[in-house]
Image (cartoon, rainbow, N blue to C red; front, top):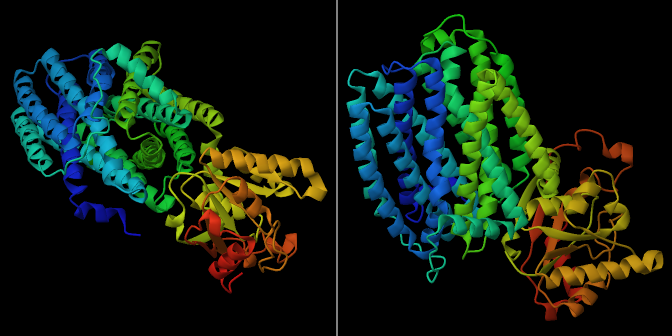
Length: 625
């Protein structure tokens, strides 16, 4: 499977990638230039006025997301997307001209109006940006594509902040920033003309121009898919968390770290680099699939290093106006920089899988509107972030205390979301387990259908076969497993969350057996993926036992394709019955065992018999138990 970077050579992705990168760059050139002008510039603002304008600027920028996202989602659904992108980029050119006028006048009301215009342009672009990716990328490219977009956005933020800060610090700063935003907007429009056509998702849609009723409809669309809706809430919380940290960073740098505007640019750049690194690592860690187990991993890191940032520097700086070199010579600065880098990296682990999950589990005809609804909730959470920050600062908290409270809130909110959707935590445990214990060579998994009912039939070698398969297959899998394995502590949480189906032989529990067959039949009729182990139990010697007749009973009731699959190498690893319990725990076999997972071509229901299926699985397994 090719690397995510191969997409940068393809016209179906590259022009769009560069277009959105330039847009993010342009936004941040202006926003940081404005921030430097307010915080470090010659506008004669008091400390309280600086705090006020920093927080109100955040509200002004994201207000259009709340007001116009519903309409922009419908427009993105109804019209061809490459044409929409070109129109949006022309709007950016007009806003850049207005920004140049505002910088020349140095009028805060005027500059805030320009910021509102940039927010409007971003509002229109958002639904197109995230709904075009599933149209142009394969499912196994989606995580990589999202990772590139998120990391490029982080890079664009970094470069935009650096350019905006450096240019504004020069003698003719406002003029140079004006030229920069005009050039970026113009180049972005030219590149956008190379984006290939992307058909509308719902060309017959009647646009509802009432933003309030359409906003409510969008929220209802999202609520129709519980996993998508709660993923959107997770994304929205990310923007609350990120907006709080980014908004406070300029004043935190000045008052608590004693740094000048160049130190602020350095710290924000470190945060952005961290986010880019975390985003790009997502594809490698997830194995080219949407691995939502990375989401809890990301949230844990965001909490821990957010808390540590408070302890790194809780008090006001004794010395001010430090340059980058002076700042770097202080020991405490290294801890602050490391915390910001790791917060950014874990934020990348958190956000990329959530965006990919929303894209893959949304219907094609509603994807743009669901993303628009996501933007609406994002806007609400960012407005709440600014309001909460203003309120807590007015109540007497200082900036480090505000950041500490936000990190603690992150822990509470994410625990709440995972209690509502235990699939996130389950996938995290699966991902940690298989990443720690095994190196998996996966072959033929593309034979498993992306949608619709099917049965996976696999040999059974170890207690964790279901965990290995469930963590490797892109779709959720309903496992049929022996009831005693279903009850194993810790693994039981994973199996229950994955809606595994416990089963027993008729002589042991006939009622449970019949209930299992009913559950299998219902799952297949609902279009789900069911995995069975036709041997009926773990292998006692590593060899494949004769298959039971249950597979024929299943297929007779609900004729669906059967995908033969084999695991290889698990007999010699932990959790098989090769050794006693004590000997299975010994090193070095305990960690990083090399195993293989192989899927064959689907067998039509009419060709499936116990004998043919067993022969096919034996062929896939080969000589390696």
